[in-house]
Image: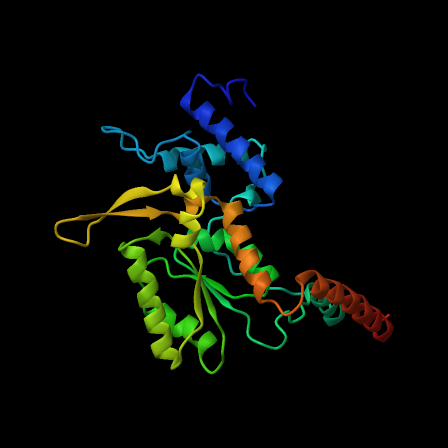
Length: 290
């Protein structure tokens, strides 16, 4: 690594250092993996980068943050796995040299129902970036999670409605806090489509962000920004607090708190039972296939 990698006299050096410090904070808070969008918003709140550069510069601060994160990974300062890309995916297949070895591996990953026989709540995020960083938490609680990524119709009918039809599964929603902005319409439309297509009323609660959460937290009140709704003619201004600006660790705590309150027993108790049963089943498999 060259001596000027963190050179505070250059913009890229300052951004690399800021990104590195921010990722170490995520590591300390147990908020990994993360994605570039959350790092950008958090550095914006820290005053490290602006939302936009003034003209005539065409690059964006988000692009510069992305470059800095790539540099940190290329030189080995942080693992590549610390940053996720929820816009791309890889299909891979599990296999083993024998069915016995496959079964052993499957036992190590086996999970027990932690919802007492009831369907786990469905977590719907407004943004893909939010879903990307919260997927790990949802997985611990065996709660399905998705993102609408704006207004959508076909995806809701083909992938989401089957999870809600013929049962009492509830929905917990995570999106920006806006008053009269596009996010209000996105959530309302999503709920309308899902209730109509599933043929039932859904227990629907917003986990974050709510007006009460913003109003009761001085830090969140400072994050209120003015945005423009270009759907209106003329364009209309409205106020909002964006999920990414709140910070990944805060959103993770909000999700955990909401899910813990719904569980019939503590998740740690379920994990203990899982470990005991895995050990017992592995012993039985070894007796069958020494």
